[in-house]
Image 1 (cartoon, helix red, strand yellow):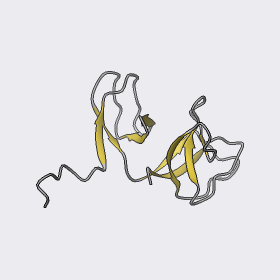
Image 2 (spheres, one colour; image 1 turned 30 degrees about the vertical axis):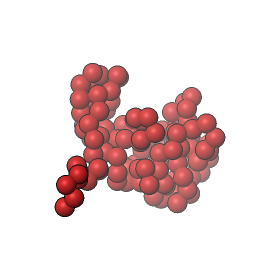
Image 3 (cartoon, helix red, strand yellow; image 1 turned 180 degrees about the vertical axis):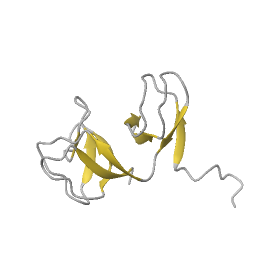
Image 4 (tube, helix red, strand yellow; image 1 turned 90 degrees about the vertical axis):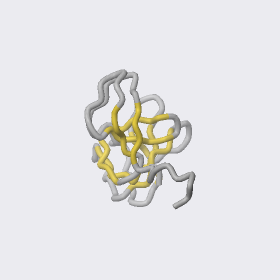
Length: 109
């Protein structure tokens, strides 16, 4: 093992300004994270930065196809396939139909 190895990089710890619920998507800079448990505002807690998660908040005015890039809208926080002005979250793991309110996403892929 390399002498400068730190960790696998699948999880991290963050200290959110607002309370997070388990499974909630949060952006830390350009890094998409999912809270692994409820995390109180101002407290440190674990987040996943890899893996496939079903994320609530999909824009239900459009479909997101398997393999498409998924973004978080800057203004509304909804998940979309529109890149312009939005933060990259990952790749759609499965197709989310037009009326769907959630999408399965492989984080930061």
